[in-house]
Length: 411
Ligand SMILES: [Ca+2]
Image 1 (cartoon, rainbow, N blue to C red):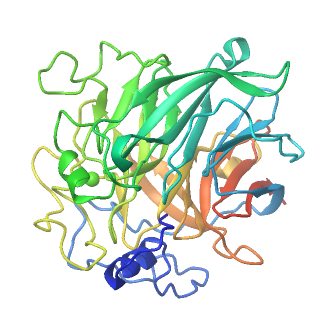
Image 2 (image 1 turned 45 degrees about the horizontal axis):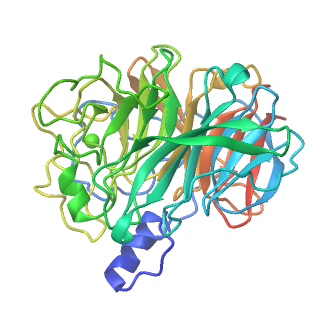
Image 3 (image 1 turned 120 degrees about the vertical axis):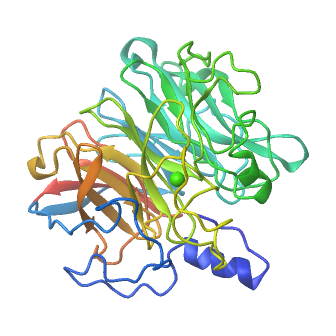
């Protein structure tokens, strides 16, 4: 996640832990939950909220390299043609053919602040892309005085006269901008009603953490806007003094995975917690998911988080949490035909856990878990995004300066 040189030993330790580089014993088959929790004294709020039973996949698959040579790819979106748009965090957008050829960088993308976790982040296409060609990009926007903020812009993908985004227009900007280069969140998800969800984070500094529970700041919020940036009139805080009307839900630490559950139409999101506190939440209208007032796990430096509370009246419990962390990236609900055994499962990319996490879902609960690709040859890799291809294969991005597009196909 964090790639800057960090000065102090404390921060270096935090870095190692957030990368999952702390001693991770190689996990043998059947030992999904063998590692001890960071906060063994904490108890889940309900049975099955953590450490769901391992459910071994019955699907044998091959991992195929579709494309390579991508510089920290972050987001992947399929076009109706079967081609892919892929962002590279340093600030490039490329078209990738179904056979894996990379285009030159596409002109017309926004200027980004590519320090540390920042850069060009997620990409989605408009639900009416076939007729309007609109592409949406999230990114860390450079602001005055070394500040930055999560931002979203859209433009029209054109090919005649050279591949480019035309008419780039800002549709969202997090306020206030902060002097930090982390926790931008920023997955983009269109809901079935045509509204756009933008997931965000607390910006990784104490000031940002304090802003998460403030109703007039946008840190730590999932926001919901119209595709042109206007606020929908049925957002939960519209017309309430002192509240940002863009907000859909609050109390999030750093949401980097999000997907609509096709069974319910609701937004399921996975967020980075501190050490031992990654969470799966169903992000519901106007709800508060607690950060930093309640959380599982402990601070990376080892101390309790605030008062060390895991539950409080009026604050939502996660549907599921991980201690130790998986370090979530992108996610999908799998609906394809190639892997019938995975239909309805939530697949979550793992950075620190260097795996693809498969969750078996029953209603609002997780009833089974499996880690895939932790034994990938020649070595496991950090998984940055997950998408389902038009033919039903599972596509992944690897988080590396030599990043790849991978696909999983039945053996
Ligand atoms: Ca929470």
